[in-house]
Length: 42
Image 1 (cartoon, one colour):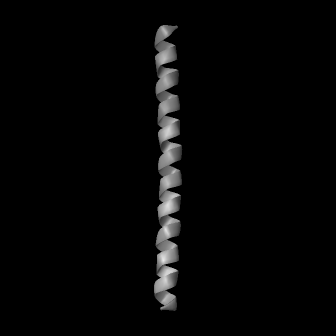
Image 2 (image 1 turned 180 degrees about the vertical axis):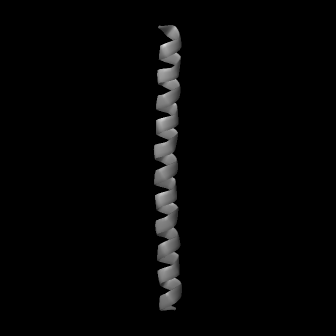
Image 3 (image 1 turned 45 degrees about the horizontal axis):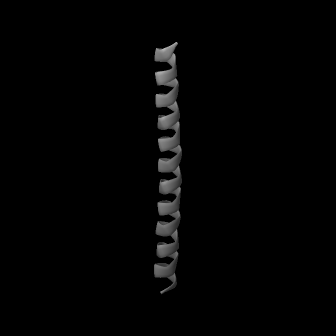
């Protein structure tokens, strides 16, 4: 039971980290696209 609880905690932690990485990547990609569009205007 303790091992199962630890495993669930680890999988939740990995899920949170994956979401944060995905969120940061999405923000970075959106920011990259914005700067690309601004460069075309200039």
